[in-house]
Amino acid sequence: MRYLLLLLVAALGAAERPNILLIVGDDMGYADVGFHGCKDIPTPHLDALATAGVRCTNGYVTGPYCSPTRAGLLTGRQQNRFGHEYNPGGVNGLPLTEGILPERLAKAGYATGMVGKWHLGSLPTQTPPSRGFAEFFGFLGGAHSYFNASGIVRGNQPVKEMDYTTDAFGREAAAFVRAHADKPWFLYLAFNAVHTPMDATDARLAKFAGIPDKKRRTYAAMMSALDDNVGRVRQALQDSGQAGRTLVFFISDNGGPTMNGTTTNGSVNLPLRGSKRTTLEGGVRVPFLVAWPDRIKPAVYDLPVVQLDLHATALAAAGVAPLAEWKLEGVDLLPYFAGTAKAAPHEALYWRFGEQMAIRQGDWKLVRYDGNADTNTGKRQPVSAARLYDLSKDIHEDKDLAAEQPEKVKQLQTRWDEWNRGNVKPLWGADFSDNDGPEPGAAKKKKAAK
Image (cartoon, rainbow, N blue to C red; front, side, top):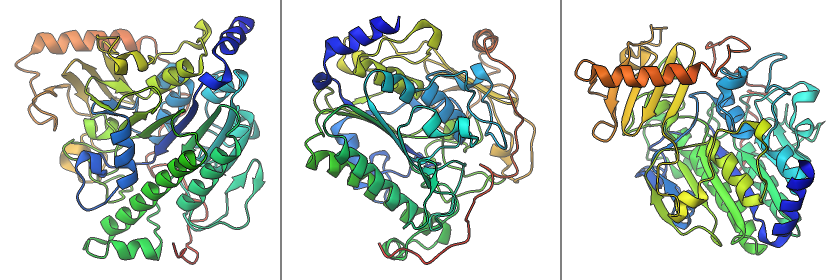
């Protein structure tokens, strides 16, 4: 089987296979990019990426929390299938039984690198260098100071000096791009921006002095840093002659944390309702971009897609035929973007996050969500009753149609129940005392001047 895989790769030829750049933002608000209408935070580089590629207006992730969606992204499977339902801690991490994207691409001859936040396990066998990444610069946990080098590693070795993390990650990613121009590469660039702690450079804070709310002002400066460094990496692609042959993905790992009871960051999810940690749209619908200048024409794509599709699309672009034992659940989006595949990529999308659940089929969504999204008291609330929304008319999920459409509720619940039978129990419990665990090195050092 592996011999056939290598034959397929060889037949394509290295020159025909694109580089693959997978960029993930952290806890971004749906409204906080220019291509979604943001007015107070300019994001020119992300807007340029959106203009150059396909902007997916119904782009989703498979969970409302950081680590689970990353587990789904890198395995290509719904994380509930293998128990990675919540953020890990201690000895927990992405199960070693699951293969992940860098391992698959490395076997096909790709150079592999990762820059940024891992959050999938910190034991030696769980770290990026043990999971297919030949190069790694970043940190292993779920959150980190933006000014303190403690906990930042290159490979397995501690980094002693570091500037602002977002700038450091952009610098390292650009260096990887330039260093590997002679062969196809895969780079996973996982910013910790705009996750807490709320750390920003003085120069960028000054740019947003007109925003009165301190948290929002700091958030804006952090978003601006993320945007600057997306531009920095794209400029490295351009300068090295690789822009046309590089497939670029951009998503956030989940929606912005806007709900009391989470560690909020000043983000905005409008016109969506809900927050990180909920199965409402504000928790799982995210900015979602795909660009490949040599292959994909710029467009807006309105049918629902999910981050699992990026895994499948990357493999297809690289000429890697998935093996049956991988049990991938995403689809290759290239035929849909080209118009050769006319149907919707998915009959339905599904979510399970503890007692919360959701299913979207067409424009109908059945959802049970954290009741704190309604009360916003910050205290633990019961999960709501099943509520039915027509997203084509009610993107904010205000008008519950469950009483008017009992058959639709039954149909969607039955379908979700059938899907859920393929899931397993969470391998570890939920801890909502903090979004993503401790923040090592949280004490600020002198702010970088940039």
